[in-house]
Image 1 (cartoon, helix red, strand yellow):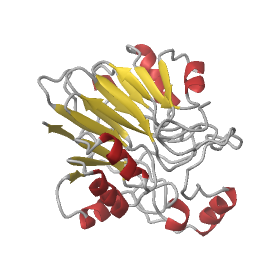
Image 2 (spheres, rainbow, N blue to C red; image 1 turned 180 degrees about the vertical axis):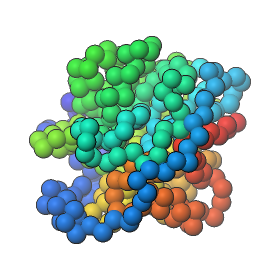
Image 3 (cartoon, rainbow, N blue to C red; image 1 turned 135 degrees about the horizontal axis):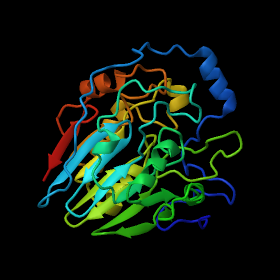
Length: 317
């Protein structure tokens, strides 16, 4: 477990559990029951057949940055020397159970067999829509990537047979070919069962490569950490920012941004380009599956915050 004070960031571990420093904490079980008993979710189609899968390039030439939204928070980031995959999920449900839990409403935008080589997998935290062991086990038939994870997640990955796992606290870094990966704060929580609430950390990541940086926010509420990340690493060339699972606000605001807050984070970071993630595939909260997209379209005055379809790519200089 980490020291009480991670390098350059506030204390966020009390010796037993992690917490969000100087910010609201995630709501507890009683509030979860209140939400579920009073919820009036917007209606969404059971499945939307509008995804045309794409095949990413096997490699990148020159200094280009090629980015493909696979689905949800799964993004393939490709540079000439490095291919990174974030929070991969190809499963039918974001759940530990085959028959219950949030069901996929859209197909993945890249078929598993069409993935190029993957050098690094970033895992932001242990929730089922971000840490999907059924998907990760499929790497057994491929060259195993380097996994970079927040504090506490190395042990469960190693128990699944993954040997190349680097665990980071906020403020710590890992070297990968041609790049440095830094774990940075997020405002969220962790837990996969009844007794493990906040036993492992949650984080975002900044990938520093020669001439640019890429910020993957993971899951996060809106907060002052965006200012600290900008101050420490400068304005990113690319930011991957979550926009979904935000209603009702009384329950979700401590852990998830709404689209207007995501756009504000984009401005604070000074990102040259942002891409919306964490929307459009699983309905995890009360807003309908495509409401985040519509609300972000309504509040962004410029085209520097992109909303991609599953499988859609963008190439950045």
